[in-house]
Length: 435
Image 1 (cartoon, rainbow, N blue to C red):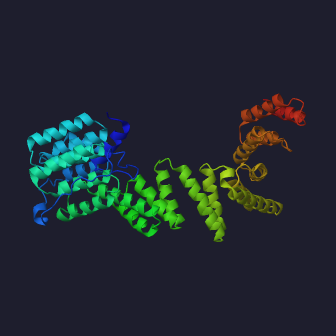
Image 2 (image 1 turned 60 degrees about the vertical axis):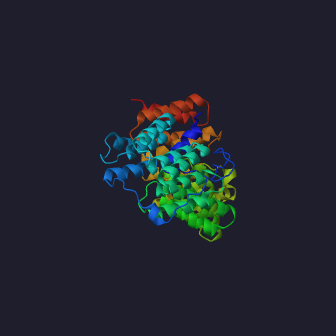
Image 3 (image 1 turned 90 degrees about the vertical axis):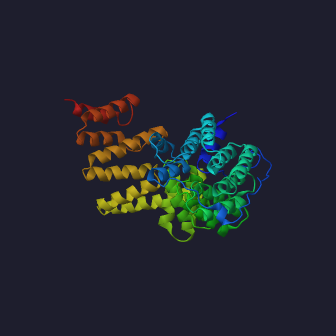
């Protein structure tokens, strides 16, 4: 029965059968046995097979190999005229990407009916069966292909894909892929499979505490399939293991920018990089990494010492802002208060100070924005403010031209505390705003 898992494997196989390290022999329905090795009788018997070299054909193969189904479908709607039997095989790969197992079988059999001696038929069938977890059926296709066609580069590639589906088959699979490409340098559907072989071998090397070997495999995996998320994540892992934290961060930042849900992973790496920077004496870089980790969702508890370091740096920036304010240097004061808030956005005093500076600089909208935040944060946290921030907010709103907003602020405070210490002043201010 087809499941979401088997549909995913079919999509991988459509691009030459890529299976991740988690796909053990048990997941593929096998206990680690390998299909019989194809025995090439010399490179002469593996001569490249003629195939369409039209630009549309080359692009179509590449799109299917790397999983770009919608663009591939557009080309399949008006395919190159000289694809011949390969057209049904490419459509079978597209069906595998779409998770349509029934259509996969129909397309394979249609191609077989056209030319039962074409090794591409057996190779494609074996790859798609292997990725669907049907290793015995895949091996049977390989045997039929050997009997019908003899050894070919396409069947070597398919044999490699079958090996990649089994436990411990990455090294042997990679050797077969290299042999196939040596025989046919333009053989399609080998790059992604080779990338995944390197990824599997790299993970094994990292687990075996061989970071240099893992790094080499990671680089090769990404070079062969630059868009593969798992290969790029693994390269980030290896760089992190090698202490190359900035390089690892750059990779994860790219992935997050692309919309990959890796914020938690990136946050923890930012925290690690921040601590390393602090130890090296690169305090500013460390602070920015802590800020990034916090902004990505780490709680103060998860930040650990980072939260304390940020709070201390924010307090220092706030003091520098107050000193600048005393010197009447409003520009420097504003910059330091902003720095304090960047490091610790919940710092109410620094935000209030910044609003005062902006009001004096006649940036009334900016002042109102910060006073509104002070008021909201204080009330949300149950903090009683020592100053009538609502009055300051109303003044800033009024001076910015938002009289209705000022009235709303004053009326809300009177409703909340009709007998509060600033109630009379609020009523006078409200009366002064009446038309």
